[in-house]
Image 1 (cartoon, rainbow, N blue to C red):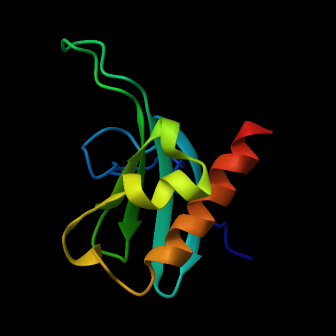
Image 2 (cartoon, rainbow, N blue to C red):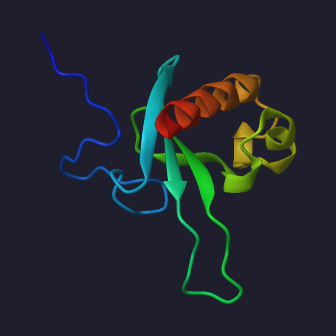
Length: 114
């Protein structure tokens, strides 16, 4: 039986869409259709003034490497506030999968907080 590999597994050239190691800030991942979606917590950037707040990053990998799907502010995890605070990347804006992606990402974040 083959081993299931998640986005957090270090191996060769696995990086997030922002170039960092996929193990940094990894919360969880889920599959939808042919794509693997990975949820990361990116901490506040202390190197700039004023400090930028932390955010959640959702990457998608459909076999050609990780690309940013969306990101949203750490303070906006509540379902009512989340939809207004999400910044979708490119073609993901208004995609039919958006609602399902956010629902699954919220579940991963909630599981990580337990």
